Length: 332
Image (cartoon, rainbow, N blue to C red):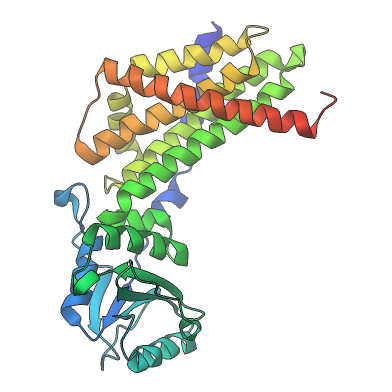
């Protein structure tokens, strides 16, 4: 009866989840122009951001574009801008473009092309703009490294929500999805640890464990929806969530809930409880990511391997939390 009540509570919470802020953030449009004297180079860098895991999902709308430096007709609206130049060249025109952007209150990223095997100092003249050195030995750009650097550098600007970046630019999808999985697994583990500390009170034990399952499941559902949004899937929560639930599999969800219910047993232990919260969340996220990214439905063997690996990481994280708690509360 307790399990049935828990499932009904979970379903009730999921029906009440407000996903509108996530959908709004994901669908928000933006524009980031790439300025360079070398227009084909700027076009190439923009193209790197549109290359992703699933080519068929490349959005039709363009949120990045290439422009000649100090273009006579620059884009009217810019959330940020990228200036591309040679690290060893005359940067007078680039600095003029940067100063114009600063006057308009637009954040800028300066990409300096050079040979990373040589020491290329990040010069004060570009401040306060963010700077990144793109490896181009002999003038030949390392595309994979450049894509990775651009992703990190644009994220660091913090001018566009990560959900929107991923939904509109396929190159951001892998890192955004991994971030959502990791962040939610950690958040669920921390929540489980906090409630576990309170469960030392026998009176509070059962209601807290039931609440745990509801909260952790809600967080997993939001994580799944964020992954779907980032990967360019439908933003209709009612449409996409049944698909994701089918991908994860009811059997896996049932087993995870059963593992959560063992926390009702006195003396089950704080570390196993936290490890289960971390592992269940991480494995669920990985299963959904693989389907959204590759159309892959993982088999039972892979699910067990994913869960076992995540459980090991979860135990390590749980012990870290416990040591930190004991240092802060030695009397407990």
